[in-house]
Length: 295
Image (tube, rainbow, N blue to C red; front, side, top):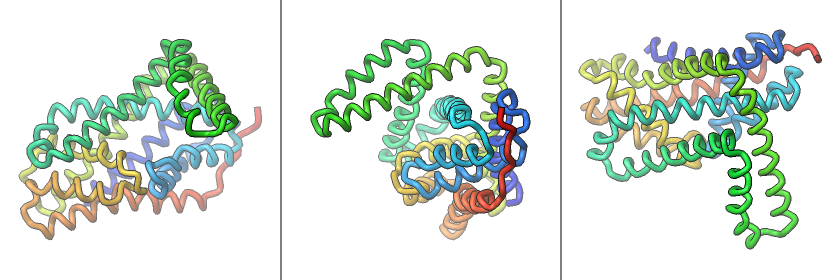
């Protein structure tokens, strides 16, 4: 059980390492304390907002508290998001090949949710890549796609939304140019992010071992957790409540034959992967950030 807790600590720590790597060339005096402070804050606000929408703004505010320029902070968070999404998709494709048939056999409805989650994450990555490599085409296409929205909202509001969308596309394109030039740093971040996700995905395996369930396939358990992660992202309720517990109990029922152990495993899993991060986030909010020197 201690190993499972160690894994979630490593998951949060490695995300802090990613922040530190990105900030190294921007603010060398951005401390390790502030780098490690961001991931728990992200976990807290992801956990209390629908679709985990609050994590990014909360991190931005935390970086502003450290004296980081808003543009630089947004740049770092954007690159971190792109890498994280990319690594999720790579992990998911591998896990899909290993564990999808198992989900389809157990519950057809979950298989549909898994595929839907994958398509959403894939669409995000494809959209970002299109902005990076087909900037003008993508920008024109987006402006055409949002035209029907004008039917349902006031012209002034539509124009404001259109301008905001174009600003976001322009901002990401400028950052993508930097990403292309910083390929060595991006390679390091990708490796660290893969390790980060690995430590998160192996948590159920060590929980099952702690409960005396030894005859489990490590690769299958990890693959199923990757798929559960994808299912959770579809539920609008904070923390994916309901969907997370249901998918865990259904998918791991064949490994744990005792209902009592299965419920206990699910509770421990949620405590470690959800509530622990939120508690750590509350602690992180109470820690006073260091201020970087204004350049």
